[in-house]
Image (tube, rainbow, N blue to C red):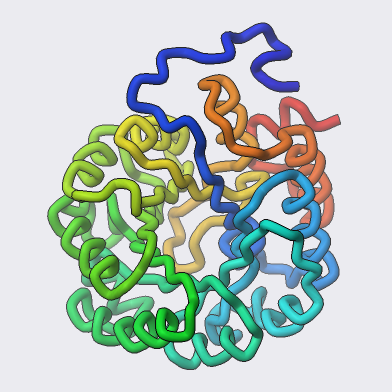
Length: 309
């Protein structure tokens, strides 16, 4: 069931809203990476297949972070070797450094993402770097990837709040984000890693960028603000939104973070706004209910809980 079946208007005021939104599905990578019980590769492959069949065209498949740090994704090579790719679907992977890039290239990937920090503390704790020197670490990764013909996305974490530093100044976020774009990233995803962002903060950060068309947003729903923040971002010109099927996820490096914005909740809102996205809500709900059963816990998505049979 969708908004139209309930008799809701097909469109509300669309001033400033994009006609179409690209859903960047992070469930297979960011959603699963924090699960304590190892998910079999066969389940991950079926998850990816179901998500593609549901109409999602960007599926972040896995990560080449060292297995010691993210054991859940230690099967990255096997997964990509066995993956049945759907036509028209992209399968980006996360790489932390040049070693990760080597693994990604050996696996034949076409799209990668790097993972940077907007704060000093998070950079030191999780990148073994500093806010300044992290760019020296990423430069050879991005330049080589671009030279190899890969598309590179930049993730920027802790854009709105850091558990050690508190609120993060918008100017600091914009400066770090611009540097990632200058390195050669074709897209920059602004992450609310611990889910503390408010609508006003989102608007303030986005206002600092010259080309909002290169931006994506990645919200966690710790305080229940992910959809509200997404709507603000759409009105500011963003047209790519990260989400996770069933609201899977958290952050292994930020204990207070709860799940990502649920893809189903995002789709419900987009349907109500009359914004195209290409996903089939019923198929997504069925997929997330299936995955929740595999994981042995209920889905975090309000829409899944409302519609799952």
